[in-house]
Structures are given as structure tokens and as C-alpha cells.
Image (tube, rainbow, N blue to C red; front, side, top):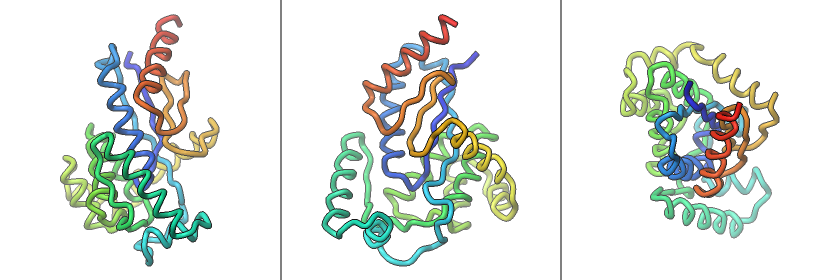
Length: 216
């Protein structure tokens, strides 16, 4: 039986992309990494986010959290520094915002086609590094194709309600088990780790979860 690690995250969450890299670092050092199956679960930070929003990233962040321009700039600088430590390039001042529901539907399609991690990675890089739109359908189709999905199938999914229930099921599961922030890691359905923890913390959680499963 595979050792399943479920990770709830959103593609516009800078801590989530950082958490993805830190988890990958931990996993590379995990003795039983070949037995791990990673499942990306859907989570929308703002299910009511408008599509193609106006204004700058700083303006949206300031309005949402009541931050001053100086506080926003300091937050962006801090996160950009953390990202650089794990090889990520953030351009937070140019990110576009947007509604991520359709992006999550494509990640669910990626799961069905065996390329979920590649789709997740491509969408996050597009948002944080390339500063592309995360809810424009033609952009999403191109990104999905980059990650190995069939472009025509991705376009058909976006034109329908396909995989909408899968997204909502993940979000309902998050509510049931008390997840209210991301990233959130559930390891072997036994241990939960909240936040973009360091690789050492995540490796320790992997070890403990594996030991608990083996004992059971």
C-alpha cells in the first residue's frame, strides 16, 4: 500500500509554493520516498475572488488585510527572500490575483491523467514567476498543455462543470477535519502539519507517520 501524503493548498498562496519546495526537499531525504504518493487537494483562499481583478497586488493585499503600503512591501520582500532560498523566483508585486476554481479543476484533471504534480507546479510557476493570469481559460489551457495534459481535453473541461464536484469535495473534507489555512499536510491520514514548515520538520513528520503506519 502506498504511503499517501495529502496536501491542501491554493495556487495563489505564496506560502503554498514555498511549502511545496520544502516538502520536496524533505521527501528527497526520506528513506521510503519511493513508497510515497502525493495527492494535491483543492483549497481556495478566497472562493468569492473576482476574475481578472483590477488594481495592483499591493493594493489588493492592503485592502484585504488592512495593511499599509510599507507593510505590504516588507511582506513581499520577506516572502521573496524565503522563496529564493529554495530556488523559487517570486514577483509578488506583479501577480494578478483572480479566481482559482478553474485552476483547481485542471489540477483534478491532472490527477485523473497521472500528471497532477506537473500541473500544480506549472500553474504556480505561471502565477508567481511568470505573473500570468490564473483564471483566463486560454492561458489555463496553454499551461495545462505545458504540463502534459491534452489541450483539447483541458479546454472541454473548462467549458463544462467537470471536476467541480472533486474540488468541492476536497474543500468539504478540509472543513470536516478542521483545515482553515494552507498549506496543510496530512500524512498517512495520521499526522497533520500546518504551514510551510522547514524541510527538517517535514522530514520528521514523514518519519513519524511511517513508523506509526508500520506499527499499525
